[in-house]
Amino acid sequence: MEQLLDFLSKAGYVIYPLIILSIFSWFIIIERAFNLRASKFIPKNINDIKNLIHRGDIDGAMKLASLSHDPFSRALSTVLQEYEKGRRNKIHLSQIAETELVSVVPLVEKNLLLLSAIASIAPLLGLFGTITGLIKVFSAFAISEAEEGVTLLASGISEALTAAAAGLIVAIPALFAYWIFRAVGDKILAKIENSFKEILEILE
Image 1 (tube, helix red, strand yellow):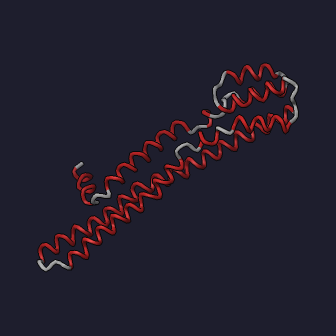
Image 2: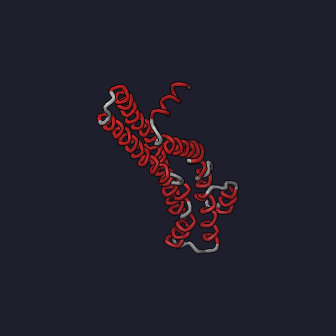
Image 3: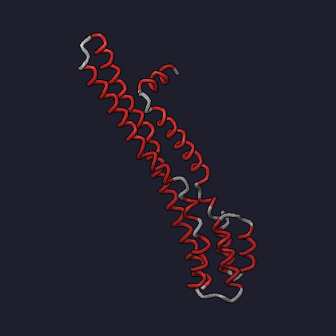
């Protein structure tokens, strides 16, 4: 613990915004790890729903879809209701599905833009801390007293290196998590799109 506090104290004032960014980034990472799952957006019984639709049991498929409260099930219920009313044009049903699912993308990509911003800003703050540390280094050369100059020189070098390291420590996990969650999100959206296409083909 003492080593950590010593490390943080050497980074200068730039460490405070970096700590705030780190807290935000880990909050987002934990939240996305729990909530960015296919089961949150697509019902687990999707195959059973497809089988019912394939057999022509639209009412049964609607009842089964109503048991889930994910965006896919709500959109599917709306599409099946339209189908039951005799509005069976594929283009019309596709438009309804797109309208219902328009809210899914923001849910899948929730807070990812902020995570990307943190990954970009943290190294810049680290660079700023490096620059302020180097200013101290060059200031040391202007001091005539040898002992004070050496102290300031050591402090400046320490601040420059520590600030750069702190910026990278915050940025690397945030950037890594961003690309992982982006890939997972794209996979979920592709699965939703493919499932709906398959259902619309069955209805056709």
